[in-house]
Image (cartoon, rainbow, N blue to C red; front, top):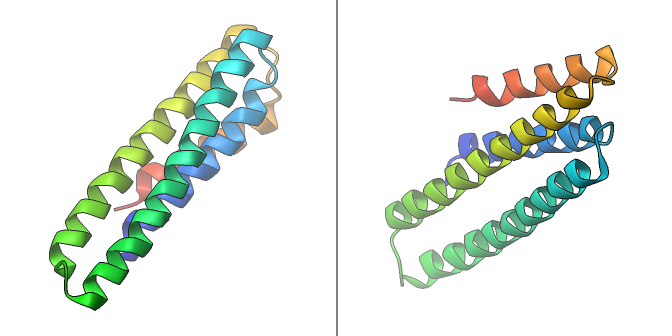
Length: 120
């Protein structure tokens, strides 16, 4: 698997982490929803890591081709990235709804979103 999808996933995870801190300014329901999304994304990222390890073992043993594995893992990575971005958007919406988000938190979130969106 290429490093670019992993970089996008890492950047998306960073966006979610920042979003969670921004969402903490929101109501308890908003925070709980975003935290649940964050937990789900972390679990899916761990599953993706495990899938990648198993796929590497399958390639080494000759059970699967590198091309098939690469395509499958890239698709799963892209799905995870999209979920992370959706969670980040939800967190931003929750924070904006309450209007008490510090300017530096808004800037950090915008920077993280730009990083994710600039990945190839």
